[in-house]
Structures are given as C-alpha cells and as structure tokens.
Length: 604
Image (tube, rainbow, N blue to C red; front, side, top):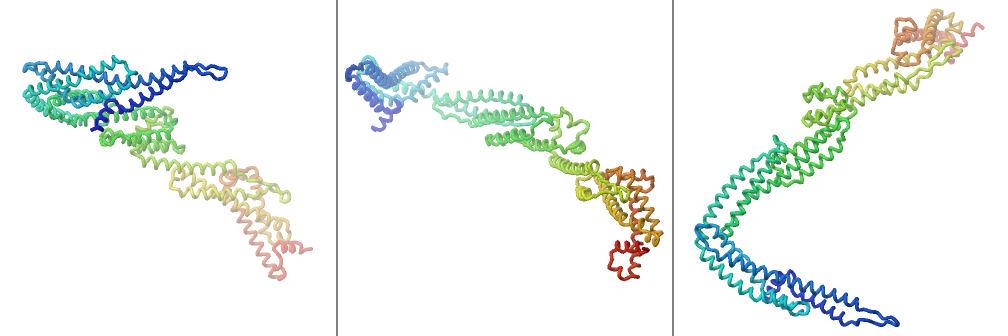
C-alpha cells in the first residue's frame, strides 16, 4: 500500500516527492551556512569584504528553493483549480433537463457523465499526493508565503467533498436516463452496421481507383485522383470518428472499421509511389533532351541503378500494385537500353551498321541520322532498343570486329602504298643498276600475308572480303616477283662473266651464249627503267614496266621469261662442265668456277 501511494505521488509530481524535499533542504542548509559566514575577514593588513559574494550565494540558494517549492505550488494549485472548474461545469451540465424533443440534450448530459466516469479514479488518486505536497511546503515554511499556502489548503479542503457530491449526482442522473440511453444506443448500433456496409462498398471502389494502374494516366491526373479520394476518405473517417464517439458516449461497443485504415495506408503508399513516378519521369524527361553524341551514358546508368535501389526500399505492399510493376519495368528497360546506347556510341559503328539496326527495328532509315547534332536520346529510345537487346549486341560486336579488320587492313595498305620501297645500286663493273637487298621488305611481306590470311578466315570479313582478296593477290604477286627478281639477278651476275667474258665458253656454247646475250640485253633494259621506280606495288602489280619496255607481257611474265633463259643457259653450262670432268678425272676435285677459269685459259 505504501509503495502504491509513493507511485501515485511520483506520477502526480513527475518524480518522487522525497527528491523535492531533499533538494529544498539541501539548499536551505547551504543558505544557512552562508548566512553564518562573517561579512568581512582581515588578512594581514588587508580587510576583505565578503558581504557581496555572501549575498550573491544566498540569493542563488533562494532561487533554487523557490524553483522547487514553486513547482509543487503550481502543480497543486493548477490541479485544484482545474478540478474546481470541472466540477462546476459538470454540475451545471448534469442539471440540464433531458427531453424527447431535444435528442441532443441527452448526448450533452451523457458527455458530462462520461467525463466524470473517465476521470473518477485519477481525481481520487490526486488528493493524497496533494496532501503530501502541502506537508513538504509546511516543513519549509520560511520559503513559502503563508497566505499562498493557506489558499492551497482551502482549495484542497473543499475538493474531496465536492467530488463526492458530483460522483453521487452523475450516477443518479445516469440511472435516471438509463432507458433513453439504451434506446438511442440501439439506434447507434444500427447506424454502425450501416456505416460498416458503406465502408465495405467504399473499400471495393477504392481498390479500383486509377492511381493503382500505371498506364494511361498522367502524373497530374494521378495526383488529382489522390486528392479527390483523400477528400472522400476524410469524410468517411470523420463520420466514423463521430459515430464512435457517440457509441462510446452511450457505452456501446465501438466499430473498428479496418477497411478505412487500409484505405488510408494504401493512399499514403500511393502518394509515395506516384512521387517516385514523378521523380523518375522528371529525370527521364531531362535525359531524353540530351544529344546522343554528348550524353554520359555511364552516369545515367549509375543514376538508374540508384532509382532501382529506391524502388526496392519501398514498402512491400507497394510492390504488388500495377503502378509499381509498370514503373519498375520502365526503369529496368532504361537500365537495359542505356548500355546499348553506350555500345552504339562505339567509334566502330558505321553508317552500314546503323542501317542494319534500323531495319531490324522496323524503322525507316531516312528518318534517323545519328550523325546529326540534334539527334537526342529520346530519338534513340523511340527505337525501343530494349526489345532488340541481342540484335544490338550482335551488330555492335560485328562493328568492333570489322573495325579491327579495317585497322589491320589500313596498316597493310598504308605500308605498301607509302613505305615499301625498292633500293637500287649502280654496279660499275657490270655497267648496270642492281636491285639491293629486300630482306626488310620480305619480313614485312610475310607478316602482312599472315595477317591477310587471318582476316580472310574471320567470319566478320564480309564487308572487306573484296579488298582483302585483292591485297592477298597483290602481295602474292609481290612475293613471286621479288623472289624471281632476286634469284635471276643472282643467276645473271654469276653467268655474265662466263658467257660474256669467257671466249672459250662463248665458242663452245655459241647458241647458249647468244641466248644469254639476249637475256642480258633484256635484263639491262629492265633495270635501266626499273631503277626510276621505287614503289614495290607500282613495279610488281601495275603495268608501268610493261609500258616502259613496250612489251605485251606483264612484269611477272617478263621476269619468268628472263629466268627461263638463264636457267637454260645454266643447265647447258653444267652439262658442258660435266663432260669436261668425265674427260679429265682430276677436274672432279675443282669447283665449277675454278674449272671455268682453267678452261677459259686453256688456249694459253
């Protein structure tokens, strides 16, 4: 019981009253201690006046005491005055005559009865804490004005009796109007049933309002619908609250109407959802205005992912609505489309690739120009690229692979058109220009032939197939011509001193010597013209030498003709030397060159 009283006191004052008593006593003790201090002190030849600081400390202690006692006084006084006003108002209200003609008179009386019933226990519980509070104030009487304390005691003295009288009165009035209360209470129960039916029908209509559906509704229309249905809902919530107040007043079971709570909850969710729709649509509209060439697709992808995160964070109940699903699909479509847009900005994309893409999207190629400075993201999104994700990826991949082939082909063409050069040196002994070493050219030639072969086997070569084939043919011709040219030049240099300078050989192989002389003249004529042309492709693959030599055969055929003649001469020479070796066995131990030298001096 003592603990219950302590709890009542603590509840009334906010904290246990003993703490107030302790704090007040604490500061009163300090006040007394400071008051007992001397007003001045002599320190050697100095007198210290402590009166100002002493008075300041005393004033500080008085303020603390006044604050604590003032709180108790205000709490008790306000509570008693409020109770007194309530008793007066309720007493007058219970005196009102209830008539059948004025139905509202019963409600007004019942309201006072309810208010008395509701605060009965709390009012009875406040008197003990008030008594205890007044006792604390009495213990510290020096800090409290006597008249103020007396006025509190007077209010407290009358209050319990006044409340007892009011308690008897409201119970009597309640009993007196019991029949009327029951009759009107039954009417309210029927109204509650009607209200439940009305709310059920409202709920059914609410489930089909337009903001639940994404397509065919603008943001402005959605907000207008939400405002309209919020007004309808507020109207029914107010009616439900009024009805429940009356049911409570007539001591009947209140109606919960969970459908209204569900509608309110869903209306709040719809507002959040359409705020998200507005945010997304606003962002997308800003993005659509960006030009295709200047847009930052990576930044837009990052922001789109942030939108998806916001969507995932939305309440679970939102996620089953058509509006959420429609918005989620639109964001995800954008997240699919933006990487495709970034791919389409690849430098490898050429006009032919755009033509292929537009045809796949069933779009007139004349209506879209990605090179136009005004070509925007909206123009690109109108192609609905997310529906052709695989096709876009394939076309971009094709463009990238073709770009690799194109760059490789450009390197080949650039080298052979501008860098590959023959070098010639004039030989005074032979009185003729000779082709210098072609090792560097041969090394590059082998590399480029391998590269062209790899391009030819690439499944993306179709666009460059003709060009690749042509350059394979050209470099094949270069390879053949250079090989023949180097070989026949070496053969010609070896055979020249034998067939031209060796009298013995010329006499022994007269027909072959004449043939060699013809080949010699043709080769000298060739070199006299060729040294003016350094381009490998020009010499080997064009008709420039054919025109310069005024012949019908091309350069490769010309080299083959000279080579055939020199090969025949070389063969005849070898046969001649083999014959000499058979006649003179010791000649087998000599090289062909030494043997020719001996034979050419045989007449000596």
